[in-house]
Each structure stands twice: as structure tokens, then as C-alpha cells.
Amino acid sequence: MSTTTSVIDRLRARVGVDGPAVTATVEAGHLKRFVDAIGDPNPRWRQEVPPTFLVALAPVSLHLAEAEEYGKGWLNGGNRFEYFVPVMVGDQITARGRVADVYEKEGSSGNLLFIIFETDYTNQKGDLVARLRGTAIRR
Amino acid sequence: MSVQVGQELPELVKHPTTRQLVQYAGAQGDFYEIHYDQAYAKSVALPGVILHGLLKAAFLGQLVTDWLGDRGRLSTFEVSYRGVDMPGHPYRCRGRITSVDGANVGLEVWGEDENGKRTTVGTATVEMSS
Image (cartoon, rainbow over all chains, first blue to last red; front, side, top):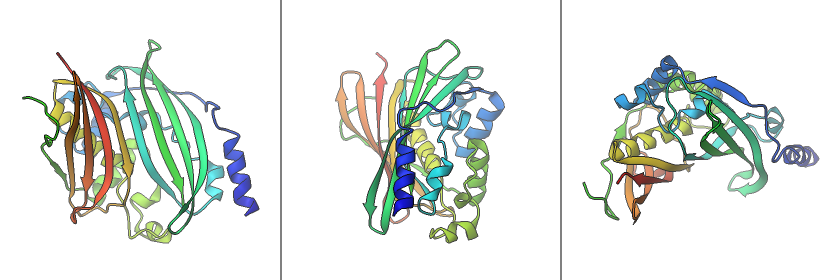
């Protein structure tokens, strides 16, 4: 199991280290494609972004290549959003993501690797608009 | 409309299709093959292509924002994915009020497959406007 141990060690070394910041502008066209895709007809989402949009704006779930040495597939374990300021069309959002935790657990059909990601989203004024915590699982 | 513990949110039933998964993959920028490539999905021991967890989260988000309207704002929203869901099957989004503390209202939300199994569970907190 030395291979998997070293993968976990390498991922653990990244805990708490910010990944590169990603900046993107909320475009009306992208927002429309997103709300069409989720099938939510609420006219409010022509100007304001719906609760899960930020993951589409600046994908920072960091599908870490090195984690792919472990197991054979990814699963999304969960997502937790905290909202502070509404995000509107035209806002310029910067996402800063990091690995918050890495651990292994025994599952019913073999071991699983849990990677906890955190992303802070700030707008063009520097206000923290939302925070996302996600659990990615290698199985 | 008063808000009381135990009250259920009007349910929302979604009818996801493979086409919608492709549409969502493009809109989110998540091109992981398990959401549109049947052969690939089976090669990683899945029964076939499955819904994106975040698409199910979006459905549950709609459940909450449809119910809330302009009466307040969403403060937190959390979902855990407990099982896989396949396109071509209805997905029922449900929720219930679990706490009322002044303007702060806590909700539990969940998504059920057609057998009533809760494949996604979560919580939300909202702050009602005065």
C-alpha cells in the first residue's frame, strides 16, 4: 500500500495552501445557460445567480491529478454553501480554493479517500460573497 | 404565510434526462464522463450515467427559493449525496421546517428517487425579512 500512502501524504502536504485564484465575470448568457440546464424558470435568475451557480463560474473543485492515482473514480460526497452577499450579472468574482482536509475511510466495498475542499468567493469590491465546502471522494 | 416547525415545503418533481445532463455538464464545465458516457460509467462500476450531485443540489436549491420567494434570504445550504440517480426517472424534492428562531428558519431538505429512497439529504437556513 506504499503507493496509496504516498498519494495521501502528498495531498496532505497541500492542506491549507491556497490554489491559484480564478477570476471570472458573471455573464448573462452563461447564467441563462445554467438556469436552463437546471430547469429553474424563476425570472429572478435573469439578474441574480441561483444558489449553486458559483461552482460553474469558477470551477475550483481541483480534480487533483495526483488523487487519481487512488481508486478508479470520483464521487461527490456533498457541498455546503454559505451566502453573504447576492451575486449579480456583471459582478467580477474571484475564487480562492484550497484543500482543507484529506483522510481515508473504510467503506463497505473497499477504502475511500476523502478530500475536503474550501473555496472563498469575493466580488470586485473585495466583499466575501460566499464560501463553499465540498467533499470529493476517490473510490 | 406563517412559518411553523413541521410545515412541509411544496414539493418539486424533476424529470431529468440524459440531454439535461449534457446541458448541465456544459453549463457547469464538469465533463466527467460518468454523466454522459454509458460505457465509461459502467467501466467504473456504476449502473449507467448518473446525475451530477450539484444538479441535484440545484433542484433542492430551487425547492427552497421557490418556497422562500422574496420573503427572506438564503444563508446556508448544505447537501450530502447518499445514492446515485439515473436520468429517465423522476426526482422528488421535498423539505420541512425544523426550527424557527426569530427571523432565522431552519429547514431539512431531501431528494427522493421513485422508490422513496432519500438519495440526497441536506439542510438550509434562511433569514426572513421583517
